[in-house]
Length: 331
Image (cartoon, rainbow, N blue to C red; front, side):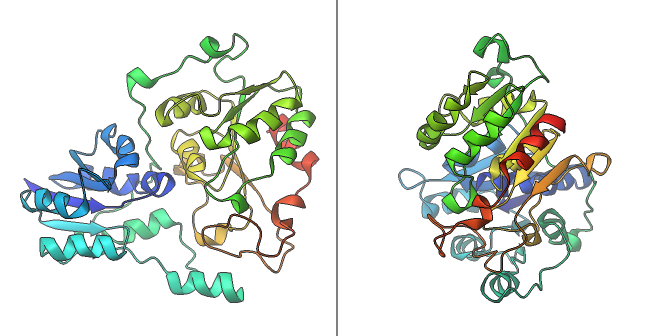
């Protein structure tokens, strides 16, 4: 049986967005599907039944040079480079196989962020990932994203708080890797105060605890779980929510993979980058986007910053609290 290696080192959202590629390769070709990524993201792939083997790199025992030696023993027929950077090129070069390479459209992103000239392809990044497979005649099956939660990582919401019943609470994912991608804590607090008729569960990492403490002051209807669960456990809480609200982050894509109704809030990045929530055809309208389209400075980055380059952060600060809260109450 032929073996295919998919290369995508990071991050959570980007890896979840590659799951249609994994599934379609496995279902449409008689192959073993292997994947190489960073250690901190490997659990996403290890729980995926369409992945036969996961290799991961870290800065200690599993350096890229060492892992490449293991990869050489696998005898790959095809390499699919969905990262397209120095490290992924290094892997392909060392394995001596010409890869199928994803087009990151960096030139178009540069034009949009620096000059506000939109030359971005009118294609979701998932469809651009799938275009990479055209030489293999693999087609998008239209089933959306995948996220698989191991049985042992499932969480029962009533065990957290007796008020939490499946399908009867909202998850607010308050974090994001970059500050310019997330609502300020005081603004999230204000939104939660306006939505006091709803049970709202805060999801985030340990770095979000300080912000969560501010938001929790909105009232007893806000339940703070930031930093208490691992990725799969947090995803389990998300999977049972009535509604999820998240920024342009990995959990936005996890929520889409779990087919949850979603409100996505955008700051310095824009949907034109092609990374809006991605659902199966029958659920394609299962999300809403909240963004400030009245700014000439947006998008200022394809990723994000620690603070607003202009100092005003209007892309988030000008969003109307009542408008966001209305989505939580009525969606």
